[in-house]
Image 1 (tube, helix red, strand yellow):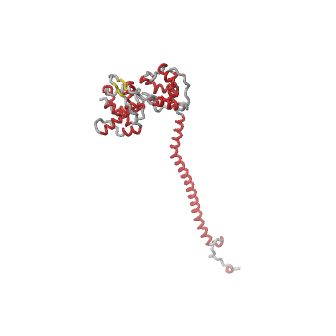
Image 2 (cartoon, one colour):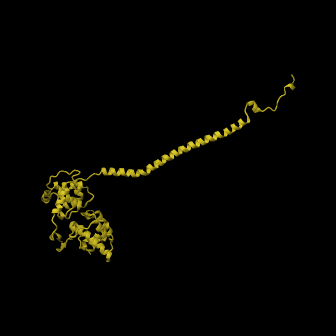
Image 3 (cartoon, helix red, strand yellow):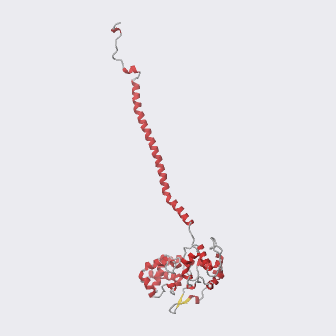
Length: 321
């Protein structure tokens, strides 16, 4: 056989020998391009979802953080109220009652003097407690310390009475103001009105000081009268209103000590006794009246506002010039 019988085909397609068509090659190229892109997109989606979850967690944590101070305050306040320790009768006596009951000034029964305390003990525990809670005569409500709990006042009453001839049981929670109200109401009804003699006391100079018979004004009335309380002296309608408001508070509370100089209080009308206080200025005098000083309880044992106290001080100072 000659070579001419089997000629060699030098133009045979190499891909035909592999069995791959041109269309398959194009499809393979496209897939090779799309698969990586799809993988990248899937990876991006997975990452985005994970970040969204973290953002949601951070948002929830932020909400918790914002409300935490409020929740924490409420819990702390509740715990503080639950852990409040009430003072003993002796502690209350030493901090509040001793100023008068330690020496018997202003007609207060002296601690340890059975004779002084006998009439009060005879009235009974309920009556004594109600007097201590609401005040009577020269003694303001709760001895001027309105921050005291009723039970603390009850303990102080029992402490002083038992030191002066009584044998009362230590009061428990609930005993402080329960059954004493009826006794107090009965006492208020039977208490005689003050006579003219009761309204007059003799001062150190021998002159009669007439106490005001005017009933104490309500807090709202006093606030209205003292709304323009100022400390600068002088005339004018505004200043006159200030002095009127100050006189009203003086007549209802301050006169007890300041009318006669009781417990070393500067006496109204005595310029020399007021001079050292006036020199310190109104702001200092007002601060001492608010906080209490010496035998004087905070705010003189009243519920007066700062402006009302300022007006009362101004009135007493003006009356002592």
